[in-house]
Image (cartoon, rainbow, N blue to C red):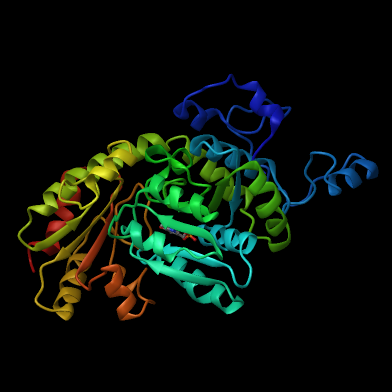
Length: 408
Ligand SMILES: *Cc1c(COP(=O)(O)O)cnc(C)c1O
């Protein structure tokens, strides 16, 4: 649980996000450490049997066992909640564990979920296949077609789940419009905010009920740990997520929480710097003769450019994808592989949100387990390359990508 009422009282009201990113956390320990403490412990010694009984009964604040809470994990939860503008937050062991916890907590057999066909591959598999085994129904809609979202809603719809911008094509959906559809349907709107992060986009301000994160990506920001989180109202976190988390155990390790906690301190700087580099790289890629198309919300050529700029503080995020020119899917795959295999500086690595620039081939990795039809529907071609832009010098990035592009 994110809220430690005593420590939040120590900070004055109305601090800005940049300040909260380095200041919001649980109170200092008795040693007065300036950098937030790492409480690497699975259990907590109890002062008395009476107090222990009250803590287990929920009548007294205080830690008992790592599956129910840890001060370092709580620090990370409080800081992320402060950045997202949510009342509370619950950290999880990975981004997928956050989606698992959300679905487990909110859905039962017969309930219905609407989500977009452009969502993260594992998200589509988890809800569309795994939860379907337990009788949870779902409808997959085109990301940007609001009428399709509206039409998919049924009386049994409990959840609308959107990701914006999407991986890897950067498709953007209108969060405020989806929140309106969800409200009319009596359903909740959850938004996967991995790609924009609260530095650029705060879905709660636009009416979302739940913000889901893979902390593995930009929140850590340096490719070190797996982590996840759900930001939501105090009521949702306390009444829905906490009981399932306590019994289900998808908890975040204190060490990983500490890494993400410190990562959040530089999130704003990194997102702005990496977005600026991504925009320059996207402009350069767009005029390269070996490239058919560039996908980046920051480009004027992007179909939802205006919406993206309105929703994301005028920035496009740090992920750029491009299609190499090719006559057939086979040639596209061979050419994309050639670009990836020619890299000498940037990493061929299926992650994103790192200070190191990472390139991948979505059709054979993140979207490799989808059927060809699902992949086609999501617009993931064999010639598609995703670039998760890091912090190297722009000229070195261009030179490294040119090695393959100029020798096709
Ligand atoms: C990586 C990712 C996830 C899953 O997060 P993990 O931490 O890898 O479990 C979910 N959604 C998006 C958009 C992602 O990029």
